[in-house]
Image (cartoon, rainbow, N blue to C red; front, side, top):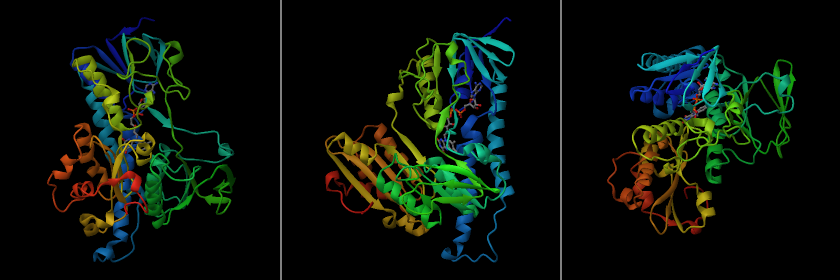
Amino acid sequence: MAATTYDAIIIGTGQAGPTLAVRLAGAGMKAAIVERKLFGGTCVNNGCIPTKALIASAHAAHIARRAAEYGVAIDGSIAIDMKKVKERKDAIVRRSSEGLENWLKSTENLTVYEGHARFEDAHRVRVNNELIEADKFFINVGARANVPPMPGLGQVRYLTNSSMMDVDFLPEHLIIVGGSYVGLEFGQMYRRFGSEVTVVEMGPRLIHREDEDVSQAVQEILENEGINIRLNAECIAMEKHGDKVAINLDCSSGDKKVLGSHLLLAVGRVPNTNDLGLENTGITVDQRGYIQVDDQLRTNVPGIYALGDCNGRGAFTHTSYNDYEIVAANLLDNDARRVSDRITAYALYIDPPLGRAGMTEGQVRKSGRKALLGTRPMTRVGRAVEKGETQGFMKILVDGETKEILGASLLGVECDEVIHSILDVMYAKAPYTVIQRAMHIHPTVSELIPTMLGELAPLDAKKGQPGA
Ligand SMILES: Cc1cc2nc3c(=O)[nH]c(=O)nc-3n(C[C@H](O)[C@H](O)[C@H](O)COP(=O)(O)OP(=O)(O)OC[C@H]3O[C@@H](n4cnc5c(N)ncnc54)[C@H](O)[C@@H]3O)c2cc1C
């Protein structure tokens, strides 16, 4: 069968592929993009956008329950209509996904294929029964929920972040295996909707990549809302128990069995690279299936690039989009942008959120450099007090010699936004004194960042509680 020839083929419509496809087509290339399922991939359909829409509903419920604290009387009980919650989420997702699909389908020079793409060799891909070929490929196939072979998992029904999107009822007791970013967002959300929630984590603390004081503060926030947290659950096993699911735990304390109505697995992600025919191309993947790329996102096979979660260089929408920017800059703008230019940045969208930039305190300590630390509990942030949202704390680390900011962990109301003032100064490689001397607006959470920077102390002298 003769192949249709393109200048460039993009596989996957995640957070890098679509914009890159439109850029390449706009630059005069004959381009094609292939999507096997939902336009917009994880972020749009079962990741960032729907979870943040659901979190907004959960937040509304939470504030409604706290209304009396603000002097607001609600006559009657607070009820959650899960069908409406899902409808609202679906409408937001639909707008985004359909908007993207229409954009791609109406772009000149760009052909959209709907089907699973599989490499026949390093220049040809089969989609459905068609062969398409190009000298340039951009792989943006993303990742999916990891389903590890846990004992008993085959006997029980379980949910992942994808199937959670179809839930339009209130689980009586949601057990979440995995105490990291995805699990905690769903956990707080469903607790606020009214479910009993138990988070089961194998490790000794939640979100283990963060500093211990951050993990501890997040645990307290969740426990204050009545979420059960079971740590050190080393030997997790599932069991069918009538119409319920039982999780057997080997925790150092607490019951050895938890009985729930529903089970959500949130134990990491695996790249969608096992069914892409990569073995026919010679592209190198690591042991976990992530495609190996260089600093400009080139694989070891000339002309083939990998962007987004499938390259293991990031696991966020903004890292995937930044991958697009790097590839486009190098290919079209003669601008040698690189992955290593970027600074770690992300948020955990529990309420209050955690905004992160750069190194953790643990990483700074390990690096052995002379550093300064500034901290402030949210109870000493006027705007947080006025809003009645004083949980959490902020901390920032500065290089004692260069005065550059090394990292920050901001856990508190609005901190997913506040972190950007720190991030931008880090990108500017400017000393922290730039923020310290900037006049910030009152009353905001951001106005306390200069104050915190004015109270830096040597990291080695740190004692006591977070934010103390
Ligand atoms: C519950 C959850 C919440 C999240 N929240 C956030 C957040 O708040 N902020 C954030 O930055 N990130 C968040 N993320 C991560 C974020 O969703 C991903 O990092 C982001 O979607 C980037 O993905 P991507 O561009 O690599 O590809 P994806 O978005 O995963 O898209 C890949 C696309 O490729 C398609 N595809 C795969 N294989 C083939 C094939 N062989 N042929 C054709 N098409 C194929 C898939 O169908 C899919 O549409 C969240 C993730 C989850 C699971």
